[in-house]
Length: 267
Image (tube, rainbow, N blue to C red; front, side, top):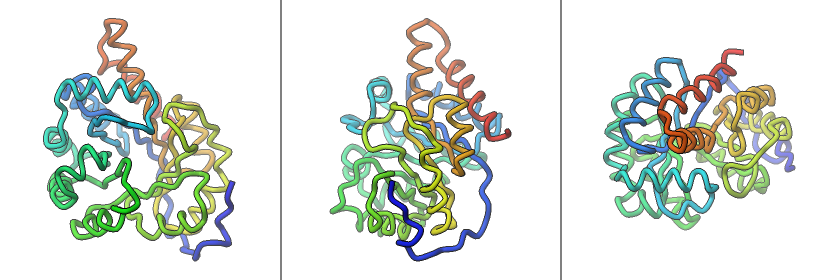
């Protein structure tokens, strides 16, 4: 584990952040109408943030559960324009982060066009997937031009100079990824407590952790470790998948999971 306290220029933390659940919802899995119902449910129960994923192919950092969710959503033609139009119905009531793949979504349409659409829809920020380092400057320049906040992703094993660069460029929040590899694994949030504390020392932005959070207990321990935002990804897709296999209502099953997870923000 890298200790960053003495390696980064200090930035005093200026405010406290309310514990926030951020479920990852795969847009269009199994339909955009189910996605709409889940977003409505999140608003009704007071979920603080949603990471809304535009489905894409070749999701190399995703585990099998999320890969199948991408495939189901792609079969239902959940393209960027439809996803952003759906999000716009809710952005006045809940913060929505757009998760979009560089090769499949951002580059074919152009950063400027995608970011303009996201801003017009009221998105709270953008989280790129698979962004090549060679395109990082163009991406961040376009985001600043559009005044669209960017989520800064830091892996737990990242070198200090990488952490410094991410912190300098981030404007939405810092996403501390618990482990490098595929989503859907397991993590112990308390193992990241020192890193979370160091990040709080160096940035006023909220700090999120994700990859491996699946249960209410995981979310509760993430908040105990000091994070501001707990990102739950594959567990929501798994609830949808299981409901489909069992002949149940996928929206209802996923909504029930999100409700249980969100209770940890009130504990």
